[in-house]
Amino acid sequence: AVLTKSVGISRINETIFSNRFMSVPELLRMGANIKLHKNIATVVGVKSLSGAKCISSDLRTTFALILGAIAAKGIGTVMRVYHGLRGYYQLDKKLKKLGVNIRLVN
Image (cartoon, rainbow, N blue to C red):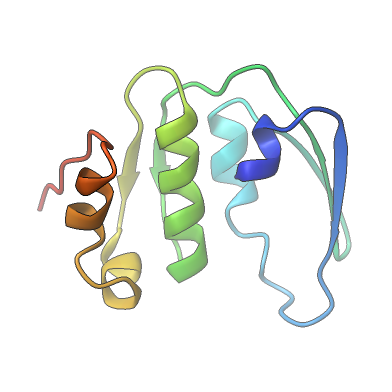
């Protein structure tokens, strides 16, 4: 998520967990420029992301999508965040302390 806003091209070579890039399709909904080839993600930084409705599938995806939504213009919605809530204690409250406009909806 962070690399989507960086200048230039970044490559991530994942050698441990084959499903590490589960956030990519959802970040693409926000306007990210990411290409996957086997275990390598190539990320081309974009000027802006746009808020979108996204679905989380695991702990890391949850946080990646929240970071993407924070960086995006407009309203980002991340559904199925219970994955992240199990892994990050009081995540919404911590982000609010940092000035993030976040609302947890059941």
